[in-house]
Image 1 (spheres, rainbow, N blue to C red):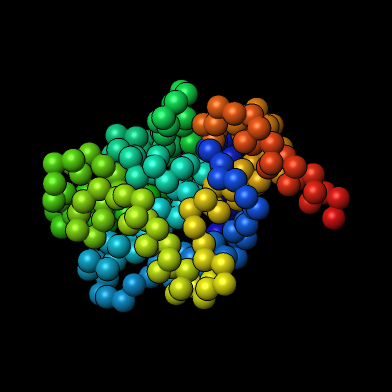
Image 2 (cartoon, rainbow, N blue to C red):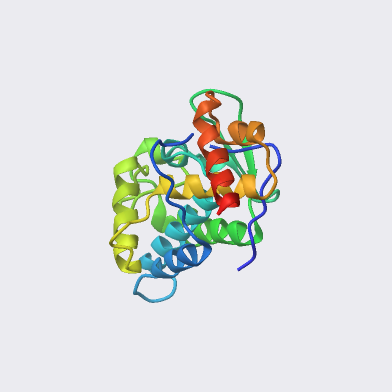
Length: 209
């Protein structure tokens, strides 16, 4: 699996509390448990592609759950390999996806979202990127349930994986790759600098170990 590349101008908001990061091997395991039984090209194949796309989007952008759920088809630039996010405040943030991320998102579009079988069931889902199994807009509770099921299948029962952990992981990896705190704040779409300082503090602690 190739290492995702981080853009230099963009990132997401941060939940408080201790940081629990998702290691690369844990992420790979989550990708594997996305595989659902069923014949190739069947409904389960579409759900598998959707779940992997969700994981890659969170892993490579660190966007908030609300931002993920409100992504539109028009926010994806397949030719450029980017995804654009509009938060509650601040400018648009554009994220470049790695080759693996682009493949995962493309597979979801081609195998599920843009096929007749995934025709939206309600008008408000027409332009949404991510749909539920019932072809309705993905919402926070749907995503929470999905991560709970994936965590159980992956055997992460003592500390289930949640989207905020992928967001925290993105922030730490960004700083470790040489990104500045100001750039991280912009990419996370956070107005308060104090909210991103804890990532810097975490990296400093790691360097002292």
